[in-house]
Length: 302
Image (tube, rainbow, N blue to C red; front, side, top):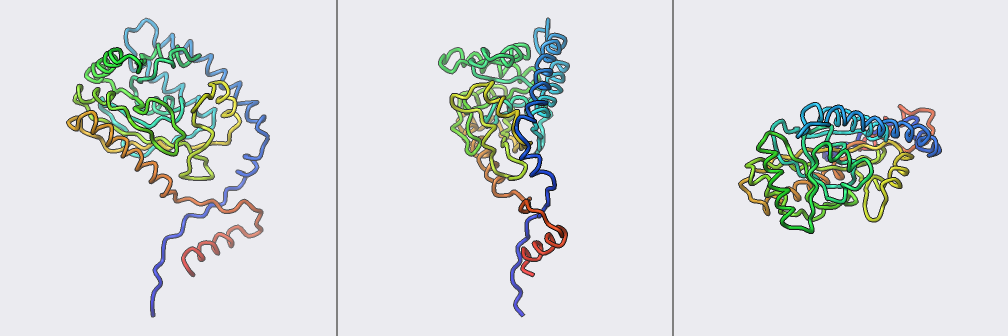
């Protein structure tokens, strides 16, 4: 008797109520999300004054307050974090792919550290002021000498015992692929003799595991307020954050940039190919358990 090779079936899950929540008029989500988000935006200023004002450098209280605020803001927008890998506990350089300004809030909840951002962000409402208070290093890529000074400052921060988080693409992407990484920022890790931790970020719909969401990417000529307005009406999302194996500083900046980009690209591909949850068709069934059992039997060739 020949045995047919069996492949594991995906996990089949009924998701009651999700269809109703997704079909609810978008204005209903805005009615409670926008006032809550405005409340937390107003709360951020006194919170930053209390934890960051009159301090030459941010301290543990400053990072903790911003992490608490970031968690609340993401929760209001319906974004839940799924974290994989080992979060670094020692000072390192974190290099992540860049999809949206929300990346900063997500990483701030996980890593107490200083961010490196493009100088244009200093002029953004709210984010520019908060970035100044939290010691963000604003880099001018059009000025090579200024960029070198910023990277040397980032090295000193790591040597002083604080992690530095940056986005080597220099711009945002659609979340489906990873752009080319600039090699210059990785000089920071080489000078500080610190490891580089690649981090893969992907926003995905809870009903489509592994597939990149089309709403969260902040790309092109999109405006900050327009993006927030659309996001306030969106269905709940999952932000997957995967911390990848560390890269040694001895590789040099060019090799570090190539290896970090390759590691993040591979991680995003694994997320898309390795989604293990498949949601059943959204239809009313009088016998959901019997239908699920029949689907399982079909998947196993029974």
